[in-house]
Length: 436
Image (tube, rainbow, N blue to C red; front, side, top):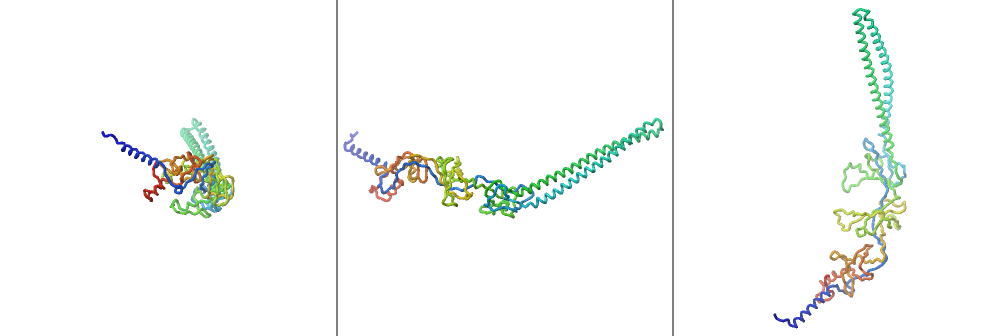
């Protein structure tokens, strides 16, 4: 084996140190101050805020439905306009009672007829009972007389004795048949009376139902509030297609029994439904304050409170939004007669307070290998540093692991460097490139 020459060993050491220096040079991205815009991490006491939009809706609402009356559709004869303020007990919907009034008159006539039949049946039963009693007395007298004649058979001729026996047998048969007929007529009379009484009961119930139906034709408001008329779905007989517009119910329309014609909403108790991203979910909880600005009432702010924060996302299976949304319900404090359900609202949700929070612009956060990083400037170069995101608030990010005042890049210096490398020659030392 040939010994290594001192000149070769020295050359090897020089080459190794050169590569080592190049590797050290490539651990950071160099740039002039004018090349990469920067900012500094700020430290301050912070209250998290999120801007959102929503729509006013009422908490309390009562439907106004057509009464469940059999016999076809109902025609509206009274219905105030949408937006009318009504009080408890005010008539908000009335239907034409003509058909029910006719039924009431017919049933009343049936009731009177049934009552007359009952009176007649009872009178006839009394007359028949008296007649039957007389006939029964006669039959019993005839049997007793025949029995007395039979008792004289020893004193009369054989022929007369046989006649007496036949007369007694006939009187007994007549009495027995009469008793059967009387019992049968009594049962028949009772059945006829019960039938008439049943007709009277049926007419009474029908008349009471007609009276109740007439009362149901007038529907009153169960609460104080605003009347909102619904679209008349009864006009399409269940046929509907996308883009189809239905007219609202109005006087003269017909409604099917059970159809919801309108509703009364309580404008004094309003809430707003909005949504927040999953990145904000942990920073908001019930009881926190909310400022609402109603687009229909410009220049004024309304106070509210978060009532609920949904525990699960409402995103569907085919939702393309990668950030799942969580519903937040906001209750408006106090009452204001100008507020109406359906008004659009812009919200500022005031979340958790974070003392001595370190914040940076959201654009200064970058993704690399599944981690969140910032590019920290040191001695004219930018070094990637992992950070932990604690919260988002109005375009800024609350982070952990970065000292206050740290200067960081607002654009990715590695991308900036690669772009310049394509447009400059290899001899231009504008950037030193290396991937960590």
